[in-house]
Structures are given as structure tokens and as C-alpha cells.
Length: 110
Length: 112
Image 1 (spheres, rainbow over the protein chains, first blue to last red):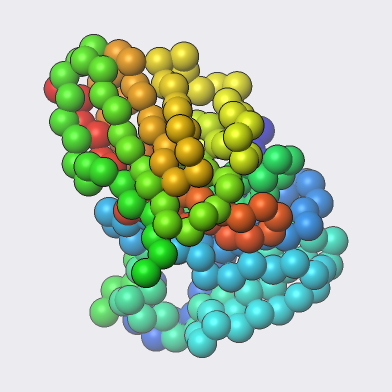
Image 2 (image 1 turned 90 degrees about the vertical axis):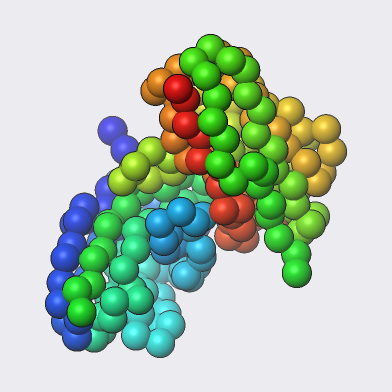
């Protein structure tokens, strides 16, 4: 069983649409991170959420950490082709080990 | 700019021929990671160094080994690459605690 689950696995939408991707676990975490990865490059941090119930906004991206700190969501408003990529949630466990969820592959069609 | 650098960007090796991938950092982070990423999958942790302590994942094959001679450098050795080892190999660094990972651009390994 995976520590983190993400849904959906794949998402293809038209430019201008809204979308939400989810990251879920049965474990409680002190923090959770979201990364975006473009083809041929390493993942790049989008945000770290720390407090249960926390909401963070990054331009058209809204991140929420669940009250129980077991899950998180990423909402994108008015998606653009530049949002295309692999979205990964990740958590640090003991000894700073970092585990990634399986990812959501997003394709935004112009 | 402080960064994580991986060399080479592309590596081709023959089946069974040892290969070494390298990673260097100018961030002075004390935690370093090696991940394997196959097409359309998430990065899979192979091992990481928590300061000088080496942590090997239970499912990392014995074929994979790592060295960290100092804070700035880390190497991934694949002793006898198989076709299934073809992948993107990502190096990352982090400070301790909730600090995020900083990734290099990876080395894409092809095994012929």
C-alpha cells in the first residue's frame, strides 16, 4: 500500500477550465508539499502546507491542507497550457525521508 | 545561483557495464537524495543521506550503491545495469526539517 494516494491519475482539460487534484493518506503529517514537474526536468516546489485547515494561494493555484493533516487538495482556476505537467504531493517522514504520491498528470489543451 | 547539478545529463551504457552518475550542490544542505523515475511515474526513493548517515530503502536493489565523500558531492553507482534500470535519475537536497527538496535536472540513463 502506498503512503500517499493521488487522484485523478490523468486529467486532460480545455484552457480556461477549473480543476482540483487530491492527495490522501491514512497517516497524519506535520507538513505536506506540492511539486510540479515538467518533462525532462526535476520537480519544482509549489508550496508547503503545515497547519491543519490551512489554505494557501499562489496566483491561480489554491492549496488546502485537511483539518486532520491527512489530506490535501490543489485547485487551479482558469487553467492555461503552461499549467501542463505532473503534479506531485510529498511528505517527509522519519530522518527526513521524502516520499512522493503517484502524481497527477495534467494536460491543458489550448 | 545556488543549485543542484547533475552530470551527465544523458548517459548511455551497455548491459552489465558499471556506470556512475554524479551530483553536486552549492546549497550546503546536509540531506541528499537519489530518486529513480520511470516514464509517467512518480520519483521512487533509492536512498538518502541524513547528514553522514546513509539510509537505504528496503526495496532498492543491491545493484545500486551510493557514495557521499563530502557535503557537496554524491554519487550513484550501478554495478551491473540491466534493461530495467533505464530511467531518469534525480538527485535532490534539503535542509533538515520541513524544508523542501531542491532537485537537479536529472540524468537520463539508457541501457543498450
